[in-house]
Amino acid sequence: MADEICEVVGCDSPSERSLSNKKVSCTSLELKNPDCRNVHLCKAHYKEWKKLSKDAIPDYLGSE
Image (cartoon, rainbow, N blue to C red; front, top):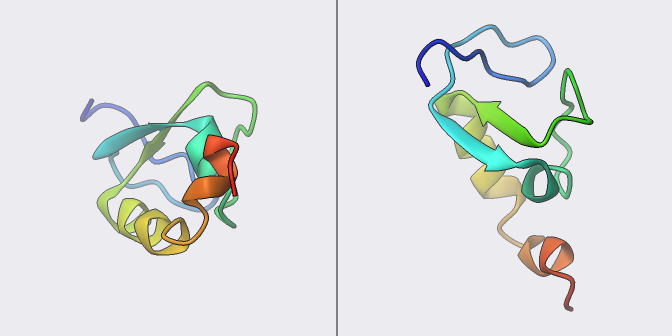
């Protein structure tokens, strides 16, 4: 996965993790291609996603 690039707008760092679009869409991260199935995130944006999604987990699971 090291040849993938982070998909957050304005970031060109190599990706570290891959998440489903559904998990990332519940946060405020702006993606280069919002229609993609899997989102590749660099280490910094993955850490940011973890902080942003901490309270939003029920949103993408479909429960409250």
